[in-house]
Amino acid sequence: MAGELVLLVDDEVNIVDLARLYLERDGYRIEAAYNGVDAINAVHELDPALVVLDIMLPELDGFEVCRRVRAESDVPIIMLTARDEDIDKIVGLELGADDYLTKPFNPRELVARVKAILRRSERKAETSGASIHLGDVTIDPAGRELTVAGEKVDLRTKEFDLLLALAEHKGAVLSREQLLNLAWGYDFYGQTRTVDVHVAHLRKRLQQSASVRIETVTGIGYKLVT
Image 1 (spheres, rainbow, N blue to C red):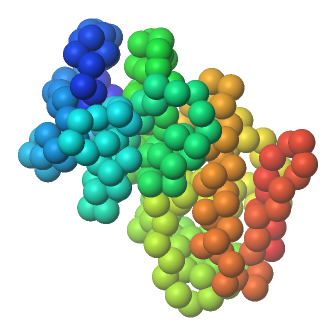
Image 2: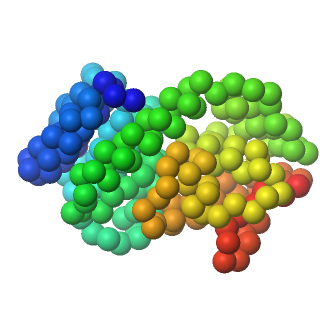
């Protein structure tokens, strides 16, 4: 949603300036931080709608910034990595990042990701509806709470969105691309590893359930079954 504040965190001034140019052109307000410590302070002081966070930062790296921010906030985070390696992306996702881009990136793609994530966040904030009961599992969309075998289970933002998408299509096989569109709010650009990472997390959260599981359908995607 145009007009919202995006915090850009990168020690490369040219990267910040390029991202600023394209995001401001779409109506976003921009603030910048150039090291990890300033990034954490900026999140506290500015309460941005979204953070674009580079991994390689002075003082505190992006992974540590993400970990500290996620411990106290659900602000969406897009991580930037200079290496096209799965390990960087997986670590970022496991720390709670919502998405990632590999440098050098197309600034138009960054704008598209920001728009999609904020659009999804806006819909999420407006979510209401009856709880979904699946055996010993209860999913409360309005309260964004999961209960498994009578115990409340904490989920990260995207874990909940992904579980809700699977539950709303219970028994149906959904491709990774469909799940990205349902849970992240956009068509991914060829990278679907993020779904696998989040499904692995969800399976751990659901392991105490005697009635609900997420099945892998080889070559297609996943489905939630009871």
